[in-house]
Length: 221
Ligand SMILES: *[C@@H]1O[C@H](CO)[C@@H](O)[C@H](O)[C@H]1NC(C)=O
Ligand SMILES: *[C@@H]1O[C@H](CO)[C@@H](O)[C@H](O)[C@H]1NC(C)=O
Ligand SMILES: [Cu+2]
Image (cartoon, rainbow, N blue to C red; front, side, top):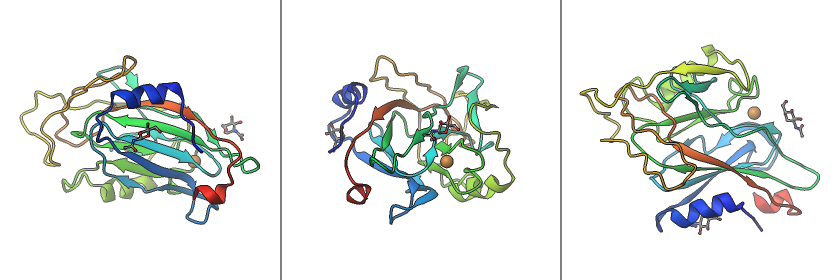
């Protein structure tokens, strides 16, 4: 039985009726054993979808990075905001208690790159993307290929990230025309930046949803 916080429930009430819940398992493999994974690693989501990161092993974060710096939390120099991050979300094997970190997708024009900020987990495989482009040179495979040589400073360190402004003439070939930061939450921050180069901007709201108790992990997987 899963319980969500009032914050998540409030977001859900304003989401489109067709919004999907997408589960991403963090920190455990298919058998439930601890592993340095996000599963699935690549997520296709529509506006209004909720992505629920379920922390089922170890002690990890999900933190927004950028194409240029796949293992560093982004700092958007235009909005002066950090990319999203969860706190450290430790799995409690004794109780079976998991943490759930929920993002609501508010745009699909720009990809959302993410990683675990517990060094050296990013280079160990804990990175992923929401709606990565198919533009050659900007794909998830390109992002993944950059990870081994990326800086990985660990939790709490940010890297400047400057999105290309929406006045650029080119539009993304990943299928997007424009970004609407359709704010459906009073606490939402959103951006409306078109990035022809496919770099990510802050584009999702986050909230920490707690947590359930007393359910055996094997039943959850
Ligand atoms: C998604 O999850 C929320 C919160 O648990 C729930 O209220 C909503 O009905 C779910 N939506 C769908 C389409 O399953
Ligand atoms: C999770 O990791 C953080 C950062 O190292 C640490 O502060 C926290 O105590 C850890 N939690 C548990 C339950 O191990
Ligand atoms: Cu981790």
